[in-house]
Length: 126
Image (tube, rainbow, N blue to C red; front, side, top):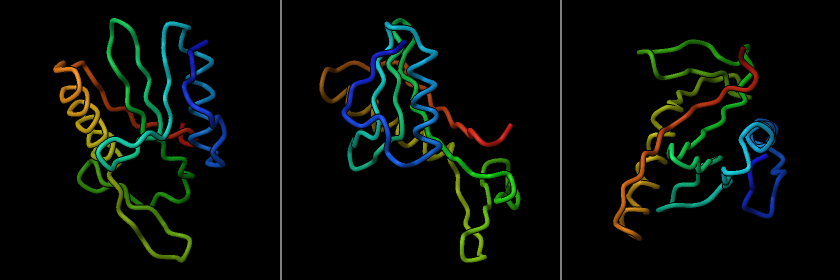
């Protein structure tokens, strides 16, 4: 069971809460998990420090399959909004942005550039 650093295990966001719970459950006790930390103005969902491996930055999108209208250009996801409109999201680009922010912050603070990898998680889509 991984070590969670933070005061808030539940945020009220079902998808983020579920992924955090599973990360704590399935990663071993050498791993450290952070949630919703702000780095250079960007706030990631979950971040897992994995010894001898790197840092996983996890972006969670708890979209229902029925809310996804289409995928454009292989990376932009068009979803149906609550008001009947459409919005375009690129969760991979979002996770990569968090990755670069964390990488820059660590390099700025201690002069190292660890291996950081972006992960996008869709807990309601199989």
